[in-house]
Length: 110
Image (cartoon, rainbow, N blue to C red; front, top):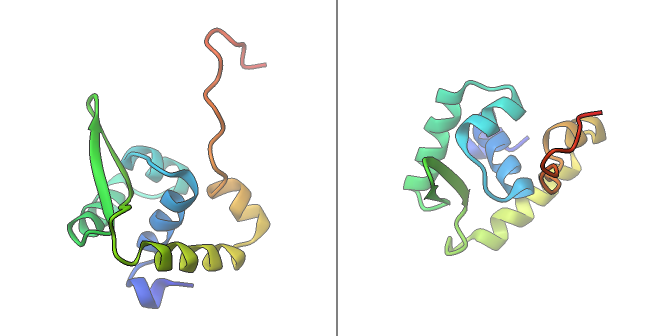
């Protein structure tokens, strides 16, 4: 849907993912969206270079998120919210469902 504007469907999916999940790392984004890690990393770095995203190291993992200092952050988030309304409920629940709190240590998988 935003592909003509953002130049890539991968970039659209990555931005929607970060919008709904907050911060994440490339491998998790690629796994959850069913994309190649290299493609996700390429777009994350391109968006970071443009100032849209920020990254920080947490241990050995580089986390990415939407830059709170990005001048068009509110507009971007409004656009992403509007784009989410056009995503099917099934796809939204599968790909863009915000993560819940972590599993308690020692809790069985059922």
